[in-house]
Length: 80
Image (cartoon, rainbow, N blue to C red; front, side):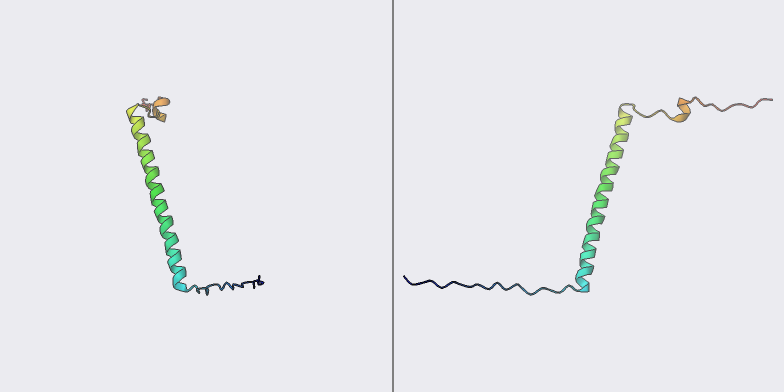
């Protein structure tokens, strides 16, 4: 048997791509777009929930009693 020689493998990393001003601006616009889209979706969801709550309250007559009805405030007549 012959002695085997070890095989040496050199791993060479790819060269690092430099980041330019254009890359940073495109990244910032991408993040801004994602945040804008998330805000629009969450706003629409909240609006839908509020409309749904209002419709459910109207359907089952669950409207809260307003202050002037609860306190039975009536305008006073000033007669001398």
